Image (cartoon, rainbow, N blue to C red; front, side):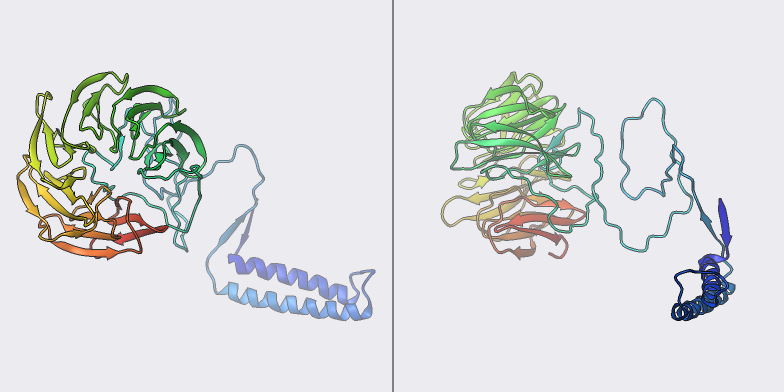
Amino acid sequence: MNIPFNSMYGFLSTTAIVLGIFLVLAGTGIVHWESLTVERGRRTLGVGVLFIILGIIFMRVDSRSGSTVQVTVVTPQAPITTQTYGITSAPITTEPSETPTEIQTSPTPPEITSTPTIAFTSTPSINEQTLVLDGGNLQRTSDYGAGLTPKLKGERWRSAVDNFAVHSNPIFVNGTLYFGTGNYQSEAGAFYAIEALTGHRLWKKSLDRGAMDGAAYFNNKVFFGDTGGIIYALDAETGEDIWRFPAGGSIYSSPTIYDGLLFLGNTNGNLFVLDPESGVIDKTYQELGGTVRSLVVADNTLYAAAGSNLYKINEEGNQLDLIFSAEEYLLRPPVFRDSVLYIVVTLPGEENHSLVYALETDGDEIWETPYDISGKVDTDHAVSENAVLVSTTDGILYAINRFSGQELWQFETSGEIRSSPTIVNNIAYFGSWPNRIYGLDIETG
C-alpha cells in the first residue's frame, strides 16, 4: 500500500494536526474521557493547540517543497529479493555455478554520508593449484601492490600460540593464516592454521623442533622446514602429515616451488630438490659453503644464497654456478625486481654492520651502498618500485634508492626490528620491539 505525501513535512503536518484536534476535543469535553479532570482537561486542551500550531508550521514548510516521497508499507512475504547497490570492494572471483543467478543492480546507489570502513567479510576462492610463498611471489619482493587494506581500528583478535614465539611470516590462503612457531633455545615448536577473520584455531601440528621461517602453499598442501632438519608436507585443511623428508641440518629458510619441484636448503650447506606431491628426492646440491637461504626465481632462473656466496642453477639444472661472493660477509636471501638482484650482507660478530648490493643476473655489480648500515640484518628485505627497505636489530628501517644505492631516509624505532617489511599501496608495514607496529610512507618515511 502506498501513501503519498508532499515530502516528510507533509506527513508530520497531517499527524500533528489530527492529534491536536483530538486533544482539543478531549480537553473541551466533546470527546468523553473518564479519567480526565478539569485540570487535566485544560492541560490537554493546551497540548492539543500546540500540536495544531506545530502541524501548521510543518504545513508551511511543506508548501515550499516540491518533492514527493513515497512511504511504502510492505507486507512481508517469502522470498524477499535484496537489491545490491553496486560493488564497493575488489571483485571476488569464484567458480561459476551451473545455473548463474542474475544480480539486480540499482542504477542510483544511495548517498554515503560517512567514510565507509572496509572489512574482510570474505576471501577470494583460490584454486588448489595456486602457489603462495613467503614474500608474496617467486621474486620475494614483499610488495603486494595496490591491495585492498582495511582501516586499522585497534586489535581485532588475539590467538594464543602456547609458549612459543612466532618468528615466521604467515602466509594467507583462502581466508586462513598458516605459520610456524618455536624458540631458538627450545626443543619444541608447532605449526598453526588460524582463521584470519576471527582468530579461531582450525588446527595445530605439534613439532619436535621449531619452525622458524615461512611456509609455502601448493595444491592444497603447506610445506615448511624445522630446526630439527625435517621438511614437512601437511594437508592444508586438516594438518595431517602427507610426507616428511629428513634433510639433516637445521632449516632457517622457506620453501620455493618452481617448475613442479620444491627447493629447500639447510645449515649444512645442502640444497634439496623434491617432488612436492610425494617427497621423493629429485637431486641434491651439496657443500655450498654455509646456511642455504630461500631461493628466488629471476627470468626463469633459480638463485640461491648460501653463506657468503650467491649461486644460480644452470639451464640444464645439473649444477650451481657461483656468480658472487661477499667474502667474510653473510648473505640474506636475494630479492629480484626488474632484472636486478638485490642482496643484503652482514658482517658477523659483536660489531655488526651491513651492506646492500644491486647485481646483474650474471652477478656483475651495479652498485654497492657507499656507507655501512648500522646493526645486524636479521630479516628479509623488501623492494618497492623505487626503494629497497632494510630493517636492523639496531631498530632502524632504511629506505635506499634502488637505482643508485643512496639513502632516501631512515626511521628509528624504540627497539629491535626482527620482522620483514611488507608493502601494500606504497606503505611499508613492520613491527619492532616492544609490541609496536608501524606503517610508513615509502616516499617520505
